[in-house]
Length: 216
Image (cartoon, rainbow, N blue to C red; front, side):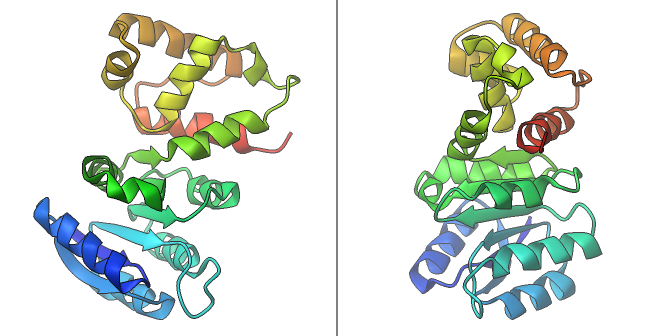
């Protein structure tokens, strides 16, 4: 699996290259700036891009914007964005086209090798990998006048795990319940949120996140 990596800090970039190579990924390019990232994505057509949000020359959201432009040129290009802090706008922009193959992780997750590599693989396969802190903040934003308030604490827990990209089996294992119980909670969530139930894990995650982060 070919990866384009964009990170301006040399030590972190070098560490990520070594980590990904150790897990069998091929690093097609490891770059440090927005213009380099744009060229690499256009010319190398990787299987997945792992991109720091803030890259030179602007050090604002250069990496994210390069990735979004590349996805417009190549719809569905898998992109995993890394950020130092939770920025809900970035998560919303990533999810906007609803085509999947997106992830948003805080850089702290990089230090858990298995969790990070799992996120890269999930995104590369067309799935979604959202940082738990992002999900928690999206949930916390919603007031009692929202349909979200009708969810039970157990259903909110299921939805948070579902939004991270976990399957029913993984949710069941995490919560120490049966898959049947998770399926029941999931069905209730979609009914209460007025969303169509789907067996497609990626579509259901995107639907839930889009609902939580949309304006009234």
